[in-house]
Image 1 (tube, rainbow, N blue to C red):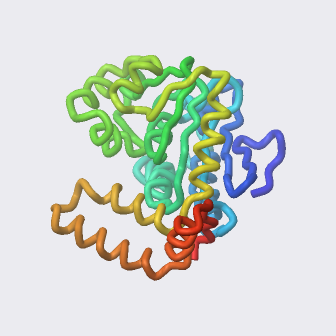
Image 2 (cartoon, rainbow, N blue to C red):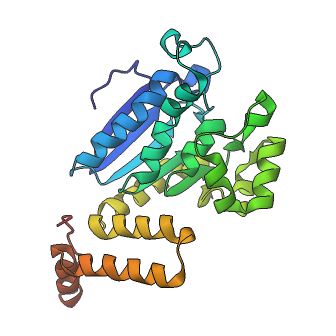
Length: 263
């Protein structure tokens, strides 16, 4: 995951947390085709790396991500049919959705279009009070992409999703929190500390149990109650066979903090 200060995607690993920073502040961190292609690669590497337990996405400067860069096209991608091009672009959305470890969006500023849908695809979202949000596609003559049609109605309900998508208006952080787009809004000066605390708590948690909880919740809307209970039974059966559950019970009895190893 090595990069240089001039990379469009910066990576940093500390205390089992991988931070991926969109690094095009002059363009409000708009995503280039190369960045779209690199996101799933980074996530696959993080999935395979047992030292990484949490991934945090954020942006450099005063923006999280302005969506896709609509500037000059990549010549290689121009030769592709539009549907093939979009499938490549959307690969990261699917990999993020299937990613088994906790993901956090640290929304430090403007977040629109595909950038917003990337943030909504994360498990937890925390925003500075200065952040601004928009499903801006309609104003660019486009329809939703990067999972917006799937994520948005599940988070805010169908009618509100249609309002956000069809009008493409910009809303503030407080409204975003009120309708369920983000978990919490904090003063901009406190955002780094709040997300660092959340990421540390997630990294200290039981990796296998957290991954199965993610999967249970992500799949819940497609299941009946009996199917959900069966899925929970299978997950708990796995948990009871792990060293982490033994450690958690022992730590509870010994009145100490458990040390989870993902085993």
